Image (cartoon, chains in turn red, purple):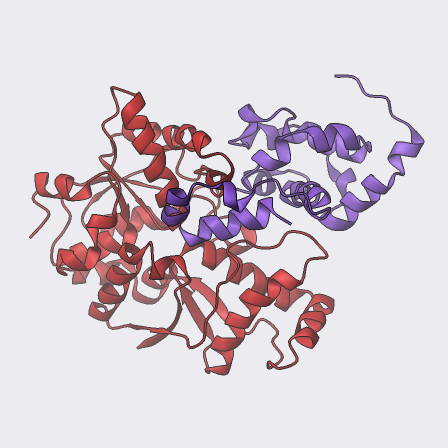
Length: 292
Length: 135
């Protein structure tokens, strides 16, 4: 089965270790992630100002691309793109005045009213494949790997885009469980990593990272699983500083959820591009006998 | 902190603009402080998120524009989903940033980001950061 897929800019450059294991894993599960033609940058953040419609044009154009290619659903992998596309879509659905202005401005495009459903790949795994069916496809259970499940912000907030309970999300817990690893829940799992503040003041990022990583460690995690390339960058850069400054902290491997998925499905580790990860995950995997 | 409230301030252009840009009813807030309690960046802020709301609706433009708070906000929306009054503080923070940025005063200059960092930073960080910090 083919799924219309929006990759976004970061996955094509910095986060190949998020995208490539996803495409390969979905093939094993009987789905083809088919990149929509002529996609453009989504703008990365939703415009919050009431009068700012011009920044809605970029995400809406992508939704129009999906629509004109006959798709009713658009799958995303990057948490930022998911959030931006889904919020733009909700705006086009709910606000007639703004919808008309945006449609009139893009008079070269078809009129759009929010017909495409924006989903995240985690929702596809849960709702279209199901945890039981996924568990049955696991060839190489990740036994003994204790992984903290980290959601960040954009999969869960605001409430109207959340892929799971805003307060107590379990979707990553269920995924990690289905893959045979041990999910570690921890109180900072939805706390912000500092996001784009790394542009303004990189020095503050390690404090954000410490709040999250120390909480995961104190709950028994050996690694952390996430879905957002910016969380990955902030927690990665933040921990580089922490390793230098805190004798007791030796670093924490960060995994994209798609890498754990690919590994458990028995795919070659090369597809995971672990060389792009922070915190030396290969060494932990070897220690646990989880690399073929 | 003590402030002097005046009808002139309450009806100022600043208050009108903040309401217009945020699209939010700022009078909804009943100052419970939930936003400050859940904000992961609050310890670094000079005005707490709760104080920003109160000062903005009282028209205290100088206090708001001189404060670092709106620039430290990472738009994580912890305040938004936890507000018992349904007030979206992230939109007020955006309005406050835009009142500066739309005067062509950038908060971050892209050329000041060291080249090695620029090469390393993922696009979503660069695009979102420059959207929030430049006009």
